[in-house]
Length: 115
Image (tube, rainbow, N blue to C red; front, side, top):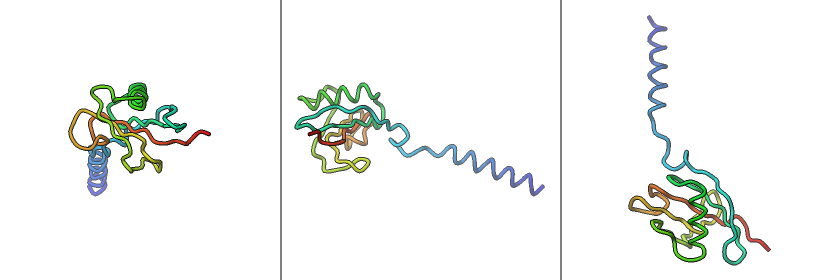
């Protein structure tokens, strides 16, 4: 009877762990390609959630040369870092609050300065 209870407790613990949601934005984060920004900076795009790498890179390139394409809301010079590198731009849409926390979001960090 005792071994039956311990086996049942193990199954219950496994189910409880499986039901705990992952931290938002961490499981879906993808490292995307780089592109050249203003002043010779090379920027690396990270798709945080709700966006493919292709769309995130295209929106980042467009924002780097002008305005953010609709529906994106983008910020520059946030003074924040992502994975230890300065954020050059953070973009998001789909909910309220900080752009990095929105339903669809990506960041571009300064990978390095060429030259």
